[in-house]
Image (tube, rainbow, N blue to C red; front, top):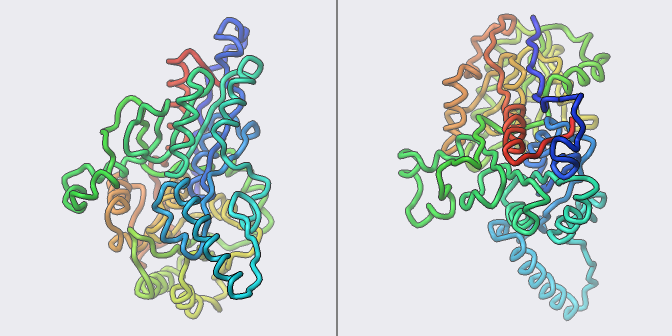
Length: 424
């Protein structure tokens, strides 16, 4: 199949003949970034992808806003993170008291970033520390770019903006629902505004609307995307193609890569979808040289077991069970086509940035914003439903999703309006 050349990420216009001092000096030149994450790869990948597209991949520090996880914490994660931590601390002290009173040994478990979560090399996000760093180093190193993603990062990012407005440029990824002017820029997918549509309003009880719907329409602070930001661009794919050459080059073509996720709140599926997917894969097997199937961490056993039973012994089929190294970048670089279950916006956004054929399974089981996301992709001709009647040898193309590069271009524009720029 003829490879499709991806667009290069945009960069700042470089004027090699003009010194920094004539373009705002060091005070207006951003050379470094802080990424504020929440510990979830799908969220942090967006921030790092934007930083990468802005040319600061090797010049950023990652901080995290972490929550206690497991057990009762699954019921508390809707609370503001600070309140969640305080309440969990109280519950933990009560539990320790009860255990001690019964003569049981009590072991202390770390709650903050690091420890049992394996994140000891990542700093816990601290507003005062980041603000002081931005202020104290701005004269020498210029302003600080702050990129945050996820609900738990909103209070941190907005506080940094409020306390150091002259020293930072703050980008919040994913919709903060209200007070968009707390940030210099908000990057969010179009389907986050689905709750404001007539269809969305009908699906939300009136007493819940203020909690789960945007309170303001998009304004000058908002960059709307089709899907999620990510780290895949032409440079990353060229590197992955080289890195994974020895494993993928010998595989018979065409290579069909299949990603199987798991049920979510907006996309419920189980054994029925697994049976449908297996049947469709058996139908297209004759037109495939190789099929590589990858399961997600959240793929239920009842789903993976059905697929393994029917396809696990087929000589054309290779199955990845989660062992390291993760072949994802090799898959994306070498695949000729993809089949993806409909549950993951992040993964679908990544494969749709390649311009290669993308077939989606289980769209009819999605609802709410996720249904709106799939509708927008279908209308653009970016994806097609996977029916089992496809000939994988026949290629088709579309304008690849280029959300990350387009968001980076908007950051450049917003910085220019402020009289700032990114150092090339």
